[in-house]
Length: 209
Image 1 (tube, rainbow, N blue to C red):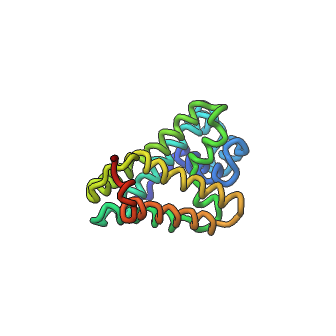
Image 2: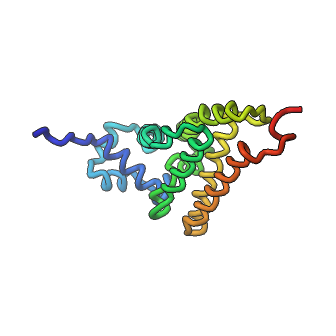
Image 3: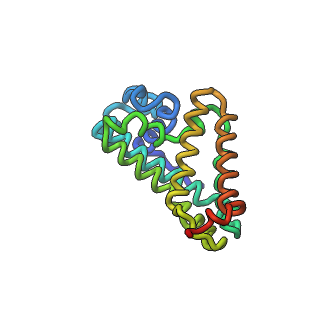
């Protein structure tokens, strides 16, 4: 029988960061709290990270790795039709809107709202994560454009980023209202919008004159 793999102090701290920052924000989360939640010493913290801000940058990268692996393995990739594949991604995002707000809140979306002006390194790490995730949708969007013979005045990249804008906004509305139902409604509207782009777009908007 193989021994269970030991989790490093660094990974424990990153996991604690993903949980606590989504619960209470980056600024409100102290190094002492993170060490306590991770079950590591403060010395171990500074062995792995020069500062709390360095941890924030690493947490954004870790978020990209962990969520990226989850989305990459999701079954919607097996759907043949590219529009339905894109809608499968939207359905998955809707299905993830369960539990308390902190459980479905985006870590990088939370951190960048706090740190965009005060910490460029964290801002840039969050941008890489958010824009990088959006890029994973571009091939499916372009395939849908090609399959429907469209020449729209928008790009696969712009629609991919729009999906993230709607999702991040939905998280904010859910936090403001204390109701995840409002977030689900926004995701439903996003799905309707995408269907309209590819199935109900007026002829004079489907291509350039």
